[in-house]
Amino acid sequence: MTYDDAIAYVASLVNYERAPNPAQMREVPLDRMRRLCGRLGDPQRRFRCVVVAGTNGKGSICTFLYSMLREGTLRVGLYTSPHLEDVRERIRVWSRGPSDGARAYGDDWISEADFAAAIDRVKPVVEAFRTAGDTPTHFEVLTAAAFLHFSQQQVDVAVLEVGLGGRLDATNVVTQAVSVFGPIDVDHADVLGTDPVLIAREKTGIIKPNQTVITVPQAEAVAEVLRVACEAQGVPLLACGQELTVRIQQHDLDGLQLTVVGIRGIYESLDIPMPGRHQAQNAAVAIAALEALSSTGVPYTMVERGLAAASWPGRFEVVHDAPLVIMDGAHNPHAAGALRDTLEELCAGRRIHLLIGMSSDKAVAEVGERLGGVAVSATCSQSRHPRALDATILAKQLAPFCPDVHVMSDAVDAYTYLINAVAPADVIVVTGSLFFVGELRAALRRANGTASRILART
Image (tube, rainbow, N blue to C red; front, side, top):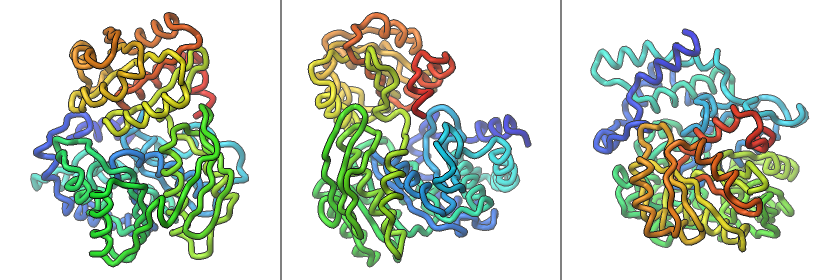
């Protein structure tokens, strides 16, 4: 099987990222994923795991933890979703030490040959399931391929991001050493509902005996769900703000400087190249997860170097200087609120223009309510993704929240127009959807320098 064959095969499977079907999504059986892995020899049992769940912040927490682990001597894997530009971003392995020099964009992605080999190995099993009328989905197959790759690469520790929910997510076939929770709020309401307590119960379905559970600060009702779930499994719950703390020393467009008091050590003057005060809590729980994995303590240099080298594109990512261009895939109200808070702090006094494209299943009005007040204009556009909301419909829904709303359906044309139309001191914020941000980001990369910081920073 060639790489193109593998991509075509994966694309032929039911993909709820591209075409959500809430009724079917609620009924995806975890037992099928268990049986799929069993037919593959249960590769997920051959490495230790950290599983990261939550509504927002999952990717950042995974990135911080993986980046710190890269500074050690273990072979480390990372599995995340969705991808911004290339499906191979989802499956990463790092097996060299910190002395190998600067990191390069894509240096840890699964290779095309290895991706094809993993899908080639999974395909006969999937086809056997298909014959029985029980075909695994796109996400299940990619997850199984990641487990196979990690096993074949003899990964010591894998960091896994939950795709959706938790209890029935394909990643929940592992027996992890640590579970980490980012903020739990409302998203994917058509699948998970609108009650944060019920959503939390679904997400805490990943908690199992004999592990450590770590969480960022949560709303009181959500925190109680976490506490009850941990008590039921007889496992400790460590919360940021209680058992571990973080203090922000500096915050600017280059990122944060922090001091974290973890569960085993104090880590002072840590530099993180990712702006946003919410990233401080994400970094703190990632440090605590690293500490929980170790029985002997964590070297300060491992934490310091790892956090300083962390990169998570498309999340308050500065890609152009004058005008300032920020890409942030805030796609739900909680993420939009975090983006607003960061803009109000770091871009105070500057005119902010939104370039926004959203998915049709997202809460447009609630996102508009949070972002409209900080922006002087909003240019509505759309990606080519099947879930993209028509730019004209988006504009009508955002009009009550922003004083000046325009429509330019082609994202590259809209970006080019804004870059040339706004003042050098202004700010352009590309937001609304990771699919939208990823597609535009890829187009700018292909343009060789229009957004030169993309090429330099990732």
